[in-house]
Length: 263
Image (cartoon, rainbow, N blue to C red; front, side):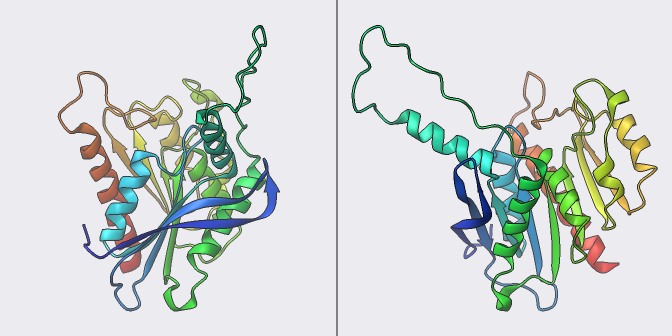
């Protein structure tokens, strides 16, 4: 790991408040040194059931920053709201409820509407590129399930994106490849990388291969064998299995970005 890489918690302001949230949290990873003219920026978004501290995203950011990329992982508003709710519930109540009083179950904030997810992703890009002196020359966006899908929607409206990557694309409901939906992919003109677990029930590999035949943008495809939508392997786990998976994902993403810069 690059000894002098810097990791900084930042607040990303939103254009409009949602779920009572006016800003979301991000972690900016800045390498000690960038090659002149080859500066790469990579933005990582979490999925529907996680947040920016998902172990894969943390590992990816650490590895990519050590490889001299400017990196950013961030929360969508629904994840920020869930974390705030969890913090509130962990605090001791000021007064004990009266005997016989029913304790109400907290309502888990719902996943944000697609337009809010896109606006948040756009705000994250603004945060990454706000300093003109360190603006990356090459920009790659992506993420896990809905994070990757949101990156695709954003890329279809922006010309200055060099590539979109998907860490498990949510192609269809679990076990229902006949209900595949990939409209977002057909509007993307940037090169795309799909990193998929072979046991991911949300994306059967044959269904994805068939879908990609109709996509106009250049695509690359990497299967991580024996892993599911959470990048977990079945029992019994091999020694150090999660780290091996994370390393394979990192290497795939890094080789892909380098290949695009050479082309």
